[in-house]
Image (cartoon, rainbow, N blue to C red; front, side, top):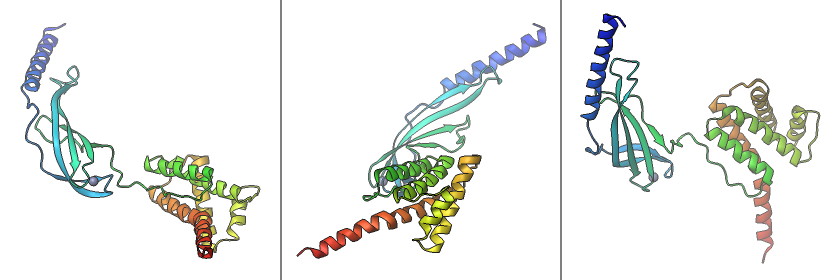
Length: 241
Ligand SMILES: [Zn+2]
């Protein structure tokens, strides 16, 4: 090793040692807890005031061999409690060596702000209900291609359940649509197209298309199955003395 390389290595070791001392002398938990914050509560289903109940963090050195002295990061975890229902949420956060946030913190469980609530169907055939639940779950987990193919399967399932046959899904939807308002048939074909693009071309649909599509499917299943069941119950109830 040349004298120049020796001196660079010596400088590196010196800076590493100084960084390690900075890490060891860094702030230690616990410290003053942060003020209340508005966070989406998955139980209350809205933004609520959250109170920090614990904040633990520790300094870490990363990349000591790649950078002069490495990068000093503070890795911390906070426990937040909803002031309304006391449900807990964990936050993992990073601070740089000047104590500034290094990117947004991550919450666990993750926020369900954009989630779709799965309807509690009671009159759906079990197989169709299972496909609907898994399709909603795929949406809520950001698995949009699977969600779009699930929507397509849902329409296939409804056609099969109603004894509709045809050479392909397009023909089946045409048959199913005869008993439905014209615009409903157009919507079904739009969802078929969306599902085909995902199933055959791995095309990623937009979340807004899927949100609309799942809302459409929810209303269709309600009209085809739930409404009939409620009507039957209403009639039975009326006939009772
Ligand atoms: Zn809450």
